[in-house]
Image (cartoon, rainbow, N blue to C red):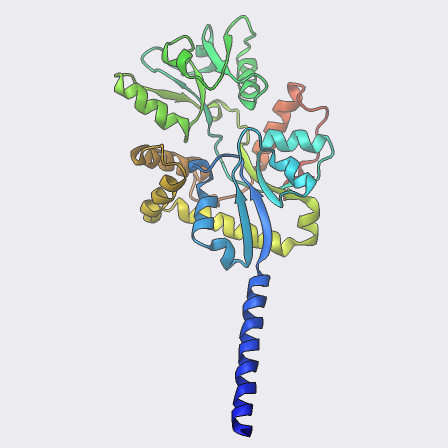
Amino acid sequence: MKTKGKRFIQSAFLLLMTTLLVTNSARANDKVSYRLKWLRNVSVVGALYAETNGLFEKAGLDVQVKPGGPERDAIREIELGHADFGTASADQVLRARTKGSPVVVIAQLFQVNPLQWMYRPEDMKIDSLADLNGKTIGVTFGGNDETIMRTLLAEAGFNDRDVKLFSVRYDYTPFYQRQVQLWPVYRNAQGPIITAQLNKEGETTAFFNPADFGVKFVANSVVTHSRILAEKPELVQRFLDALLAGWEQALDSKNEKEVLAILQKYDPDTPTSIQEQQLKITRELIQPNPSIAIGAIDEKSWEQTQQIMYDQKLLPQKIDLKEILK
């Protein structure tokens, strides 16, 4: 009886220890939330890959990846404590900081801004900014594409009489019907889709990239609360390492088949053939130069972005970028 009792106690002790280990292991994963800027498509493929392949869990994190969209404001959610991390464009960050927001930038995802203008090369050519003269150009009034285009027009010495700015909506009909000659698109998202549609009609496409004409306006970056960075730097580093590892592996051509399967899961309405093109272009935008690490912050481009916004009176004053770029 004593032996049986001893064995029972040992078994119970082992069961208790196992339960505690499992419980502690589960508790070891810090819960955080990450608000994307876009819906789940190629523009957030790095986060999707990290989530699908358990890279966050391997870093001891339980990350809730929340899709974005036009009605989602990652910075506002971070300010309110509804999100720990988020993705935001540079203009959003700069505007927020001038209003006292505690948001800081911990990584820059796109080295080349995906926002570009599509046009038909058979109808026009753009070798210099002077070639924009007399053109009808689509912009989203109040959006950063308007900011970028007005900067380009100022560089060319143009005013509103030299070009016609057309108010862009979600309907691409004005571009298809040639009412508008240059239409803003995200090069890696809508670009391949519209190109395929025009190719069916025997038409070709080209893209006007502001960076080719000296205007580098920073796009999406990863942001967090300055308090989180100060109080939990190790957690921030684990999150960032896992996220950037997701981007690195998602953009590796060796993983393309798996990545396309992930994209099809979240974006089934886009044909795989189009997603292949989207992925290829995204690689070029995220890491145009292999010597530059994915997520590296381009301080000079941030300086130019701030100067552009200040010159156009979109910022009341300049701010110290060292306080933002971490």
